[in-house]
Image (tube, rainbow, N blue to C red; front, top):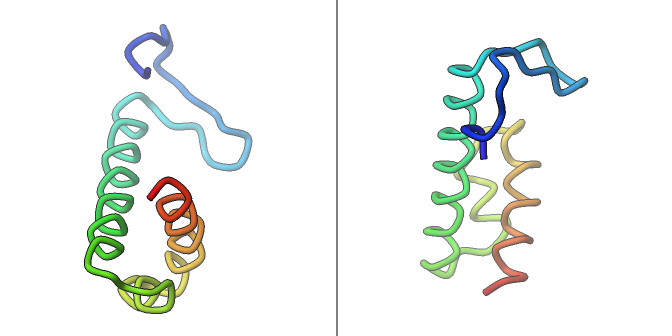
Amino acid sequence: MLDELDAEKFCSGHAMIMNRADIEKHLEEITAFQQKIKSLVAEGKTLKQVQAAFNENEARLAESVYNEVMAIK
């Protein structure tokens, strides 16, 4: 998807302006975050157990990802 965009600067409206490398790194981090949650769900972990695997700020996002994973499970 990112390859289809002819841009070098990106602005979400909720964060600082980022360049292509910043966005690629962020996408890799989010993908790893999602994969970790998928693995924990596959192990039978509950929402609370999944949230405990992350710091306080990440725990809120973990809940959203957990709910998405459970909806397609």
